[in-house]
Image (cartoon, rainbow, N blue to C red; front, side):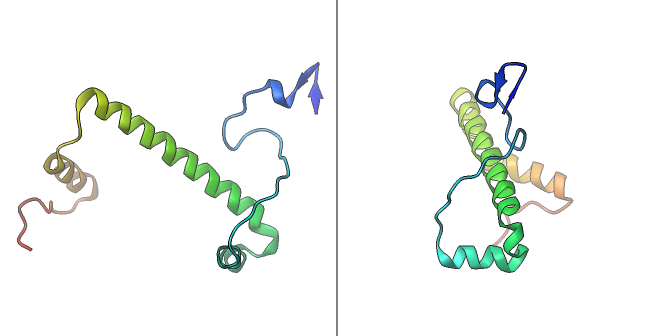
Length: 98
């Protein structure tokens, strides 16, 4: 579809934006059954769209973390546990007996 001489291929749409486009997807029968049980036959495309968007977000975050680690080194596990506890209101597992 073109608007004022611009085609969809000329526009860089972010994930979740732009016109829809049909594709063929191959997946295992068990996965497809599980999706249909959750959303019905008519909700499969929307479910897969959301799942793909979440995966793209995770991939982007993984790349960001990898870039950060290259510059600053890996995070200190104890410091992460303390910050996680602060965010979740829980106790840290650092130094806890097994």
